Image (tube, rainbow over all chains, first blue to last red; front, side, top):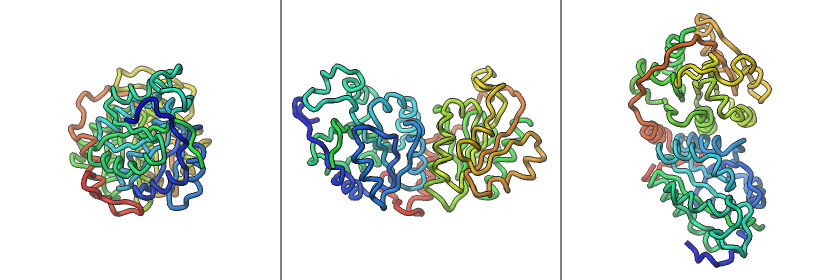
Length: 174
Length: 199
């Protein structure tokens, strides 16, 4: 992981979409996240990436599994609060049934200058420890330079048949 | 209607027509007794409420195939918003069938919330399903099921079944193996898909 005191910079939504193309992502399953607003808008403007909106993160993980079973390469966009809400589904589908589940998770409530480990809000502070405890590997997307790691992360999720979390620390930029 | 006779009809119509299917909870033991290998089938076990979303993903990912999910009413109430998600997705090839007896059979036949008050057919209709119907007669089910599944979806079918004891033995096929087998079968068959070394 990146140094905990390093200050993140807004990720380029356009660059993130381009990286998803490089990773040959077929579908983005979305439960809207405030911190990924510009990214979601960019995805909606990309005709080659299909979007599926779900009412809840539980459903998003089920939809992801169905798309994967049919040979596709889906990816999820959710929020930290939603991650906590769907832990049993991650346990049942992503971990026990080994469905690759790559999740962009917005750290809603986080502030750039505050180390996440010391954040006063549990929804921010507990995300990475919870991921670690559940055996879900994670990658901090601190800067645009980190986005280039996403294609390799996706391949690892496929190889390992496991979930992966891509942590979006602050609101995405344009 | 008895659960066993209903599942027998559903498994039979899925097998004969090569529909992709998902079943959960008490539907799974009977399904596998009839079709032990079930190569076009996935069991959603240990994650109550997720079968309908799994089936929706399959339907969206394979628009040239008919996909049928056999769910329970207790499962549907656990993730009720999935009706809205399915209705919005407008998957024309998707049918959600709900075994409706108002009971959590697996945990000992406790009543589900809304057993006497919720109307699943109306909920599905209001959520955007193209067709939503209820069947409470086994001959009617046998006569209409293929036509209902072949209709332009999303389709919702509530099957009123009798109270029954819970099956205590579960299918031995693992969901992981079923999903991987399905991906090997269909990987590359649909736009934007592929078969990677690890998939």
